[in-house]
Amino acid sequence: MTKFSICNKKKYVVGFSGGPDSLFLLDNLVRKVNAKNIVACHVNYNYRVDAKNDQQICENYCQEKKIKLYIKVIEQDYSKLKSNFESWARQVRYNFFKEILAETGFDKVLIAHNLNDDIETYLMQKNKNSLVDYFGIKKQSLVNEMQIYRPIIGFKKSEILDYLQQNNLVYAVDSTNTDIKFKRNAIRKNLKEADFDELLVKKAIDNKRIKNLVKKTNNLEPQNFYSIDNFSGDKEQAQRFLFKIIQNLNLETNFYSRKKQTLKEIINQLNSDKSYIKILIGELLIIKDRQNVHFLNKNMVLVINKKICELTKQEKDFFNHIDLTSYNSNLYVSNDWEHLKNSLTYENKKLSKLYKKAKTSYFERFFKPIVFDKTNKIILNNLF
Image (cartoon, rainbow, N blue to C red; front, side, top):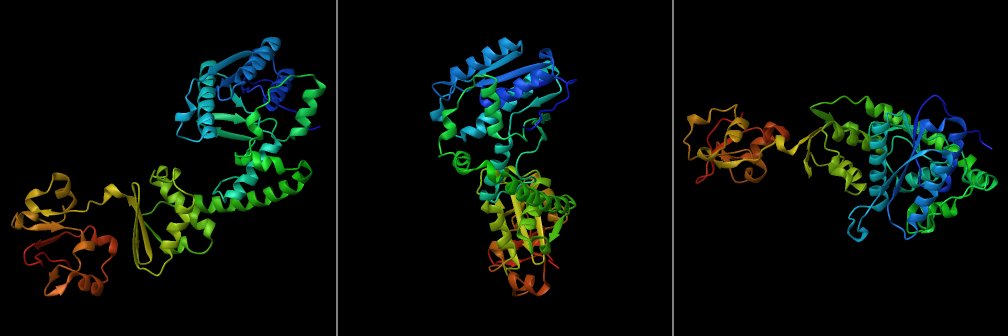
């Protein structure tokens, strides 16, 4: 059997569901660490009719082992829960851990993920083509500024169940773990521990490849614009570059509720033959300008088309590189070149043709004010 090891000089907050994995973890922990340096945390979601049984198992065990137990009982109408239950429950759980970690001043939070969980996560990530920084579950990680440690990540489920049986330990059984409507359960049903060695080799190879991709991505320096070459070639690397740029703008939340295909769709558009593309997703504005791509918050570009006398202070500031006071205040000023390019003329030539001949940057056009007479559609300021 795999050997359980942990530092016995630290103090631990343990996530304790009452299920086999967390019971195995806690029982091994209390054999090596003084019970006064351990606290257990149980969340009763009241999601199942037998949820009280799980809580009772936790209470009985902790009382026997003299481990302090914190319990959080959730009263929630799950028919009104808009988010995914598993994601929501995880957030509730980890917020609770953080609260207790702060209250006790202990060192780490211990979570009872095992080797089966690690392999299942890896297979789920592969099936979903997830853009991850690591395949599977790390032994240590930082979550919500908490040090998370998973001491039993190397233990197979069969080893855990054998141990519990040999030591006559009563554990809770989560009936939802057999419900194959959950993707993880469907994978678990067909997973064989005899295949683990082969799968672990594949996971190691994938993580080595991912490590190189992540390193390249992290070396990408924030810039005003990026060459289109960054989004051609290796598709996965291109997606990582794209998401890194979006993160640098603090706009990644625009993508959390969207399909994972969104990144691919953006890259496909950027790699099209079109020299100009404008993409707006939430607060994110992407402008392809020939061989360059600009990424910015949409609030950085005001699209204006109104009389000079009607401009707000913010709009005047946006056009601060032109002296608008020298023009009749009833004239119009605009940077909405996309809608005006075929209707306005400058020196008897259409604006669209002038921009094309001068090879004026598509991006810069948004910052070029156009002063015009709305009646005769003539541009009155010098554009070039």
